[in-house]
Every structure is written in C-alpha cells, then in structure tokens.
Image 1 (cartoon, rainbow, N blue to C red):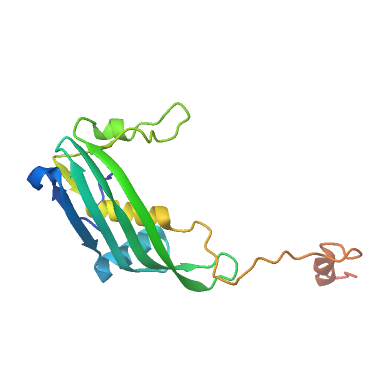
Image 2: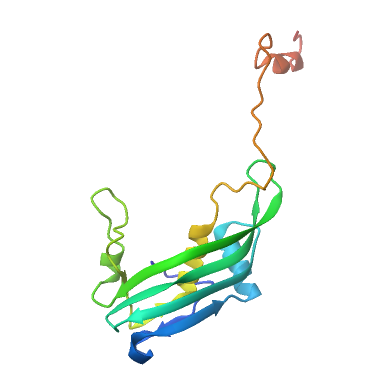
Length: 175
C-alpha cells in the first residue's frame, strides 16, 4: 500500500501497538463526502454504501489483515455511455511487517511487477484501514464497465459497399 504526499480521501489509521494480543475487528464506513471524493479520484460517476470489514491478527511486528470491501458504484457503460450501478465485493488479504521499509514493500521483481511475497510496510506502528478500503475498492472496479444487457454489435459493411463511400458523397462533386 503506497502513500503519496496528497491527503487521502478516506483515512482510518489504527495503532496496532494498542491492539489486545495483536487482534481486532474493525469496520470502515465511508461518509457521503468520502465516497464522492473517491468517485472523483477513480474517475467514476459515484460510490455509495462503501464498507470495509477487517480482522487483524498476528503480532505487533507481523500482522495479517483479512476481510472484505463492499460498495455500490455507478460507472459509465463503455458501449452505450449510459451510467449504471454495480455492486463491488472484494476480498482482502494483506500482510504487514514493521521489518519492511516502504521502499522494500514497493520493490519490483525481476519482471518489473510488484513482489507479492513482500509484506506491506507497517509505518509508525499504524495501518490505515481507510486507505486499504479505498485500495481494494479500486481493485474491484471493472476497468471495462458494461451495463447489463448491453452488447457490443460490430458494424459490418455490405460486400458491395466500400467503407468510405458515404464520406465521398459529402465532398463537393462526390458521387
């Protein structure tokens, strides 16, 4: 989980050093303002009913966060360009360690891809469950949204018709 200098639209830091025996249950519910900010960040029409439910277990040096992120999002159909709602439900399973630096957590493998075996960095004894909720919401979004029931229909030109014949008719002196 990477953080930049800009403020996060959804932030719920948890001090893991205060967890009883390194365990805890947490629910993150985004406000309408946070949902609107996330929708703008993600370039979608709307986000509503965003909830992250998490279980934290392990020790203060190596924690495992599991749970789900659920929301209703409004996206624009890539075929009809109409807005439509879709449910998002994304499972969460992340390991955090205080022995990993943020740079090590963001390291790439030999193929230039993020190394999935490296735990995320536990920074100043905290995990931001709000940022984790936003991150997994983004992972659950359909990159090519299509409204249910809408199909892409390929336009086929007739065998005797040339593809640009209609344009030629528009120019002066055309057919």
